[in-house]
Image 1 (tube, rainbow over the protein chains, first blue to last red):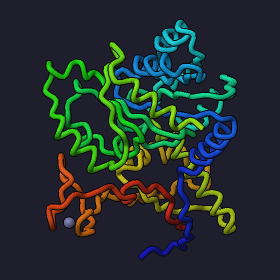
Image 2: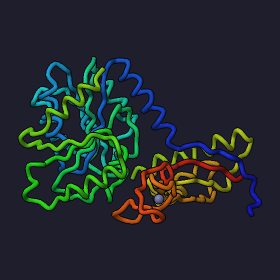
Image 3: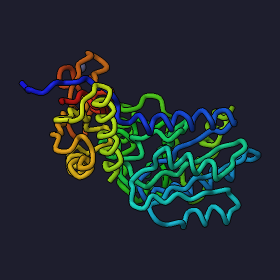
Length: 216
Length: 112
Ligand SMILES: [Zn+2]
């Protein structure tokens, strides 16, 4: 219909981010680093879950890239526990992207071990961008309610491992486990689901052995 | 929020293709954006004119074809749009699983 000449392009606009993500992933793999992209809404206990995991990883070195919009509270907490952590402030951006991770990885000077990248607290955008990770860990909670897979399908679809945190609060909240699981399995047939409580460490042994199995 | 840098990239890619074809003015950019791509079509539109100002895409129309995400039924293979709060196939009541439909984000073509 148009009088214009049409030139076919058919090029993804993600290319820059994905290209960098690929490079980071390769670099990390070569160094023997297993990278976990940790996703979840604000307040689900991403940092406290990481602390539970890191404390159980034994001889395996752990590193954290802490993504935050503005604050550095979580980084201070991790550093006080002796965990090598670097802070990325996105100054408003809703997810981490791979160029940011590239810089942080250099700053951390990781030798070998597990790198946890705590993404921005947001159940939407972090699921959409590769940042060089090997797996995506999604943390959901019983307090958020059992409809989350239905409302934020992409996060559940992309997850390689799912933690349901605050399991200790189950008696006090309306969480329909069957409905939750049904939604998760419609989107994701294979991700293991662990019931945990980051407050007292319940359930984290299994999470850690899953991670250890994935470290080469 | 994250649409600003990606809108810049859309203009860059369009310029690259225009130059490859010895064209010095882009009149329209045809973009395909899935609703699960992570980018909001209206935000891209918002930034576009502003960023295009200093490029050969100045004044170009931005045509965005949006794609609704579809699930594929694991029983009968039907592709369908999901209703809120369910994954059930409208044909056979089977269960739908995610597909790539709705996650696209690419420049289909430029018009010059
Ligand atoms: Zn069906």
